[in-house]
Amino acid sequence: MSGTLILVRHGQSEWNLKNLFTGWRDPDLTEKGVEEAKAAGQRLKALGVKPDIAFTSDLTRAQHTLSLILGELGQEGLETIRDQALNERDYGDLSGLNKDDAREKWGEEQVHIWRRSYDVPPPGGESLRDTGARVWPYYMTEILPRVLRGETVLVAAHGNSLRSLAMVLDRLNTETILQLEIATGEPIVYRLNADSTVASREVLHG
Ligand SMILES: O=C(O)[C@@H](CO)OP(=O)(O)O
Image (cartoon, rainbow, N blue to C red; front, side, top):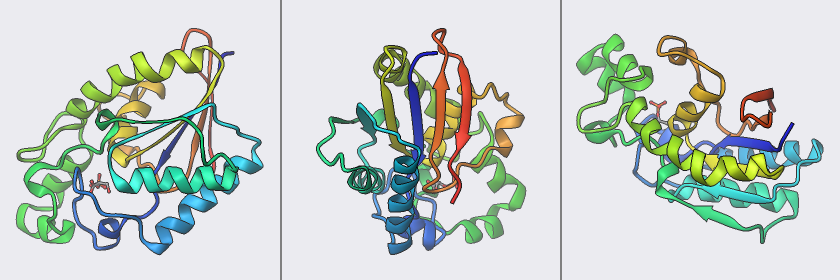
C-alpha cells in the first residue's frame, strides 16, 4: 500500500444553482456550496485525514472549496498548488447557457451526449477525452508520485475534470463512464497500491 488520494468536487456554485453550463467561467460558491464544502472538511476530519499537500484548479469555486475544507481540518496554511490543468471541462459555446433551454433547442439526448459522453465535444469545447488529455498527464507527473511516496494528497476540482481522472482510477470504459456522476462536496478517498492501482475507494456521503 502507498498513500491516499482524496478527490473532491467543489460545493454548489452560483451557476449550478441557476442551471447554467459553467465550464471555464468563474462563479463562486452559493451559501449551500459553502456549507457542503465545510461538511466535506468535517467528514475528512472525522476520518482522521491529514493532507500533506493540496492541488486545485485556477477557478474560484474549487479554490474556495479547498480553503473551507482546510479551515475545517485546521490546516489553513497547507502547501497548495493551483493549476489550470485541473480546470473543469471547457464547455465552449454552451458556457453560460441554461441546460433546460439547451435541451429544448437540441433535444434531451444530444445534450446528454455533450454532458456525459467520452468523446463527443460540445461545440467549441472539450470532450471528456480532451479533458483527460490534460488532467491525466498532470496527475501522472505532479500528483501520483507524491501518493506513491506515501503522502496524503487532496485534490479539489470539478465534476468533469474529476470524472476524467476517476475513469482511469475506477477502470471505467467509454460506456460505463456515462453513468458516473460526482456529487458536489462528497470526497472520494482512494488508497493506492504501490503499483498505482486502487486498493480501496470510499465515498464520504453527506
Ligand atoms: O456546467 C458545468 O461545467 C458542469 C458541472 O457543473 O456541468 P455538467 O453537469 O453538465 O457536467
